[in-house]
Image 1 (cartoon, helix red, strand yellow):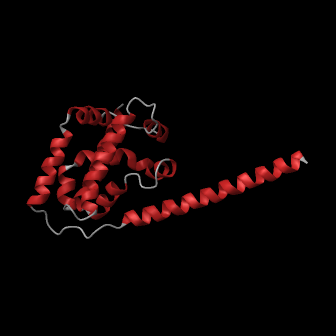
Image 2 (tube, helix red, strand yellow; image 1 turned 120 degrees about the horizontal axis):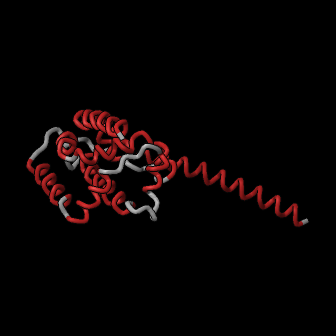
Image 3 (cartoon, rainbow, N blue to C red; image 1 turned 180 degrees about the vertical axis):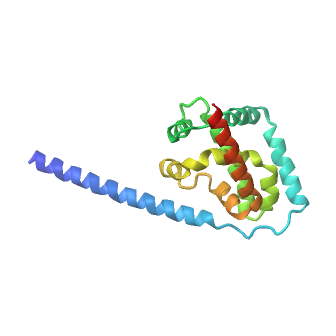
Length: 182
């Protein structure tokens, strides 16, 4: 009797897991579809865009942010496992990762929501695109393992800004050279 109950319980647990996996997959697809769309991009930058870029620049100079940016600038993941390790709370650079990646996602969200001109932002925040270029080869798996919305704003910017798309390709080439030389 106990074996039957245990087998039935195990079967139910497997079915629940499959159901949860399907639900999570549906939510992930819905989130990606939702994030793919943004407000209509601004046609041209104006003085408000310049003010925002200058404020973003000031925030980058804050001492803790500067240290975080330095740590992430030196990070070149060769494998997905190296990248994924950085997302774990016990990694020494996890706080830097969270601070820098969320900072640039916030900034790129300004363009996605029509607050700022996408090309103007891309031309003035290349460091975030450099980080995106490091993550890009592993993006699909990172989203599956961490968050379906990871780097959605950076991706939107690249898809809607010729300047961002060009910079991403240039950064990918630069990163390939760094990885080949080390």
